[in-house]
Length: 479
Image (tube, rainbow, N blue to C red; front, side, top):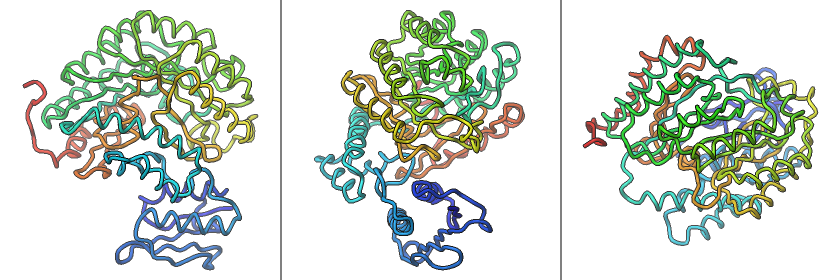
């Protein structure tokens, strides 16, 4: 079954998730059998569902985005005979955001639970959401009333030693070496301009995050230059500094010592799975033994917060494989663990070829996720953030788990979209949160490194313009 959407871009993600849940795929308008039409009208929107030129539901007046979602989900459930599923009407990539209006109130959990029941969210999913929302509330309480204009600095290094078959992120497959000198130079200039913006607007940098790709693909000399640029750009007092060292084969004691000595206090070492045959099949360039080595070296370097990522639903993966992954987690006890569900993303080698791979069926993936939740809770972990993705198997979610006292500030703030982000690097995004919250202005840097190298100086002015609504406050953080 195919569909198209005729309405505002701001509703497209919600629409895609609704149709995907009911088994539809997107198609061009002239080829699509079903069409969801959303038109602005007095006080809201007018929604209609059309099948082959004939009305299937509506038109119906909707006063809000949520009412439009209810209309579409009910119409598709009636048309297909399928149920709403575990998330009920709660569409969106960041479902915890729907609970934010309750978090600063006394008795918030009771009111939030009532809201989730009205949205027809299952009890198990509501329990997960409320636990994650509790972590967000704890961060709000820690910040208090005097949080000011807080921001995160995001630095993107979009290179990897190989292209994992499920990934759409890396801009280029590269080896560590001099070929990255040009990118490093451009990135350092970009970071320095970001620092000028941060100081001029008096932004308080709460966290720094180096993402990718694989940032640790840089040589130690290149990484030292980037770290120095960040030190010059960002005043002292950053609460959390994360570097993704996602490929264990890019980690060595000298790189880890460099990162730790410059103030990086959180690192990601991401196995994805521990079975060597699966790692080879998904084009990872390391084995399970490299994971143990890199983890041991990170501990020896003084990292007291380590994150590890695992994926449920990889080719030929079984529930037994996931049980082995969880045994390793309980043995190593990283402070953060993120359990992802395989999502077949546009731009990944998987896309439109997934039938060529021996992917586990949805009941097996669900069993893996359930086992992960049970084992991690028993080991003392709690869920502290979660998000959903398009093209994810069934209607699962990616869930971040933490040991007490180790909730990642950056992850919570990014999922909540309640904090500015100043982004530097090819493919980075900057986000300015407009007064009142939940409305953003964004700027994307070009994803292709060569284009980025040519354009970043001119794009810095556009990035700075995102914060035109804030007065120039001078170098407030150094006063």
